[in-house]
Image 1 (cartoon, rainbow, N blue to C red):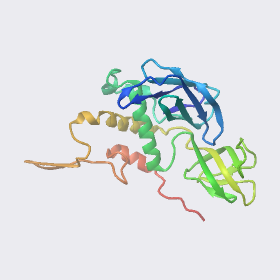
Image 2: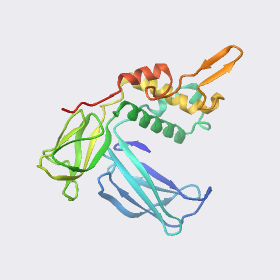
Image 3: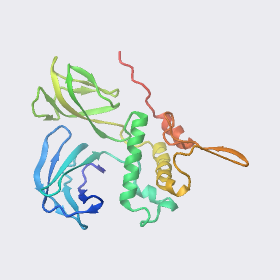
Image 4: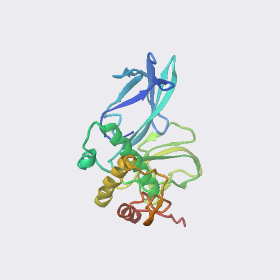
Length: 273
């Protein structure tokens, strides 16, 4: 799940035996940052409203900056489960913007969790397709030998923490620099950088991206109601053949108006001199 930085969030896990929700007894949770630093170890999780559900609240102080938290939930009887909470600087669209659509107003058919899941899934697809994040987002690199290296992200904004030669990562380390093309420069010489966490992405979602994202997420949510299997790309009948626009290597969604906007923001290659 993705949450805004500086907000309190109740992380959740569900235990099952097969398909049946199961009481896991006393459950503890360990929260770890992306660079390996432990936030809390073996804290008691609270039982949720339904059988097998457990929660643990990450405070606004803990989520103050972009991050990727890994939560390891442990039950003496049902073992471990692992979930993640990604803290970001903004969302592609707000839930209220999705609710404006008449087809998505129903709280019973489209509960908040379903809208959030659809928005998060589409956001990740859009980021992979374009090669960039549209809001401040967490990233990291590990096990790099040398002074200058490249990340898999563009628009690296700042370095959050860095650990060298196996040392515990230092928060807001001095002397490290970065570039919009994903380059990170260490202040040290030829050494092993164990892990570097950084923030990358645009300042905020561009208006045109926000507008078409609403259309794309709506399409995903309502696709199952269209009556046409996802694998169908053409249908033939008495009046000829109807071909459908579908997602592909050069089309994020298959919706022409949406894909035309995202294509303008796509980074197809990074040249390294």
